[in-house]
Image: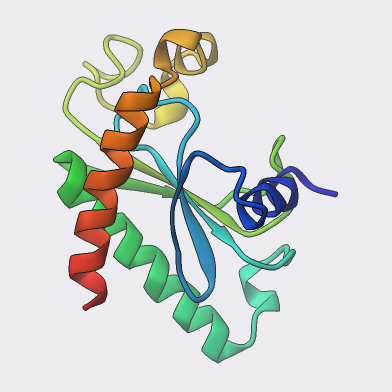
Length: 155
């Protein structure tokens, strides 16, 4: 079973503390690490590898929902720009899921072009350090902020 499917099974069992909201095509979850405050994932509900494997109507709905999640993240966390990634060839497994990174000026310090550049320019050991794991209170606060903005967009 892929890592995304495992996380979805935890979510369905009520054991995923990072869950923000279930949408029609996927689950909105906060990222385990928060160097980029508000980092969120949108996990497609079923084990599907490629966007083109979805029928046209389902793909359109999934992409629409993903953009709503991104807009809510931007509003909730004051991002200057959003970065979107749908990779599926890493540790999480080959399963459609989106990494939504709220970006701010200088958020990768001096590792890129004066603090500008892709998130992957930031050193992995810093991005995934324990200091970037949110406390329970911080996690609940982030989830509440994101849920509030998401619910406004879903009305």
